[in-house]
Image: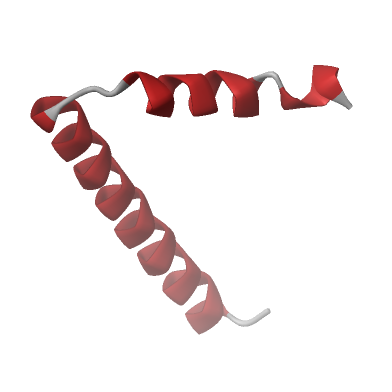
Length: 50
């Protein structure tokens, strides 16, 4: 991979992290619903369930 691809990858990953964090905080501030945490706990325990 050449250098411009690394730069593009870094920019895209930072943008994705920023958008994800923004959606996360927006979700928490509006109404923390129980279903989201159930899904989060289910996904975080995924390797043990296989």
